[in-house]
View 1 (spheres, rainbow, N blue to C red):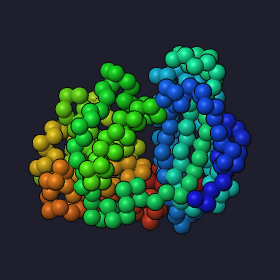
View 2 (tube, rainbow, N blue to C red; view 1 turned 180 degrees about the vertical axis):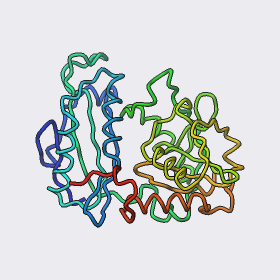
View 3 (cartoon, one colour; view 1 turned 135 degrees about the horizontal axis):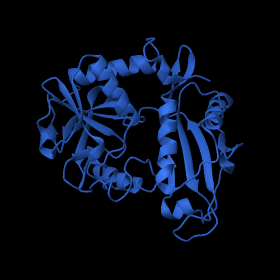
Length: 304
């Protein structure tokens, strides 16, 4: 990676010097929150996609953990824009992170400082370039998604991604590209790092927030684009496992995955086994928007 700088608590530091103490609370207990944000290469220059919404979720994720982030939205924005400029990045993935740092090592973090960092680096298509056109083969994981009565599923918490890691690695050990995770009721929740959409008879369904999913920014984007394209979107759906196999189309959404079709689930072919027409239209509109080949949705972008 041709990057050499990370922002940490108000200072730009060398990439290799961006280190934490081994007794950092967040390392031991997963007590951190983070975001994953895309910056796209456009004719107007680098453009951060839906930065304000990501910042909203970043600060909201800190609330359940009584985590006070000592840096304002404006400071984080300026730091991110300068990171992109300093490293001459035209497109990149942006990772804001806040976590409880080093002090005491009891479970309570009350004596631990909140630390904040931002990194940016080039990152291509998360599930592979071919996946955007041909789709991916996935499996339903044996691991269940944690419930919102156990931990706040609307917070993007570092420690909770152990659940995602287990599901994703189980899928890859079994020669699938990705997993689908069910919630404790046995309904479809999401992928390890993606939200999921189902298409039947020209209408679109996606699990609601009550299904223990993360409120994905790209999920919101897909819902908006689909409705603006004239589709009916049911965004508070409860989807059973069986409905996956009989869907006309399925696709993932996420800041990393963008809009990725699903061509099979548990070796059951979905629709014709390739990207469906609804998925293709939403995906095409998405890339038209993020690459700024249209003036629509300009309010979604932040420019250095």
